Image (tube, rainbow, N blue to C red; front, top):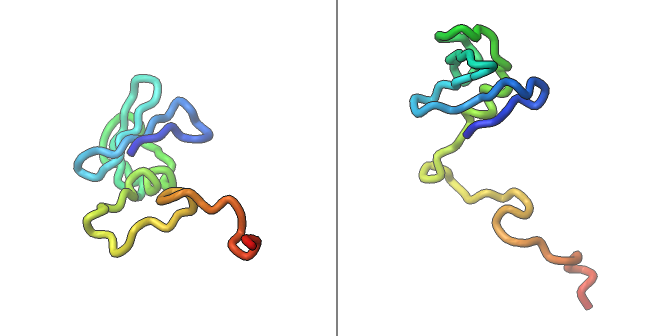
Length: 85
């Protein structure tokens, strides 16, 4: 998972294999925990909410159920069922 910060479009947040977050901006880099705590690098501040968002990638093999987000699994009916006559 990776994303550009919605309010600071020069900042790119990327999930690393070890679960930490790499933030790059204007050629500089910083490594942070999923909670936004600085670990290393010249960038010393990151948005903790974006770090948490990027690091929150559940493993599908350990999930108890499938996604139930509307529109993700199958198309929604074109109209409400009570209107079908």
